[in-house]
Image (cartoon, rainbow, N blue to C red; front, side, top):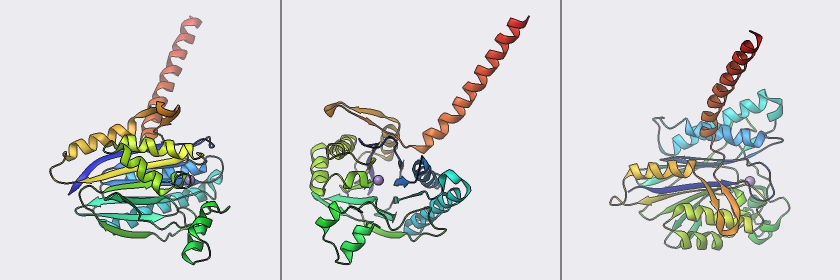
Length: 303
Ligand code: MN
């Protein structure tokens, strides 16, 4: 068994000006984070958590222990910043991480972002939401239908960054060739039902980037009230494309700015903390060059 194609897409939705979601596609690691907090603190929280996952690529532990350790590290970073920076006080983020290893996928999870498995034409939700309504449904006080329209359905009961320690759910799934895993933020699942997700994936597969676009479009058609992020990875058999191709596909999908012309919406891949990090030194260098040029021009004017 090996990792097949991957794809990812994040979109601010139709109501929010900022995108506070972040994602990581760093095979064999994948993650989605949905930040919250005043001003731009939500972006800071999800960005810090995503960076913690991205920088953990060379760790030597494995499986659920590794996934839990890197979510705990993400929690420490967000918590520390929330205490150092007054503007970031009270911020937090969800985080759902998947690590593909040998014949299984280890998943770690905090909050109401989700992991799904699409196998044999069925969509299975793998994670339990850490949200008020999900807990009320689990304890029998609310039906799943009531939860869908509950006014407090976006209240989460567990997040990264709000406490010094975090309780992480971890579990492993035996993977088989043909399995398709989906990580997503609640901006998808609060706007779109399971049938729509499955239908969109079946119509567009094997093109996962098209599937990602179809899900973002469906969430926007459903109202687009929140930021929408989807990450796909597929498990293929030994005879399928080699891992080199897999990595290339991932890089392409990360850097690609896509315009979804089918329904006139801009679908832009954003919330990729690594790229932001690279752009800043370049901008700094450019600013220094401009200052030097201005100084030379001024000196020439003096003489
Ligand atoms: Mn959200």
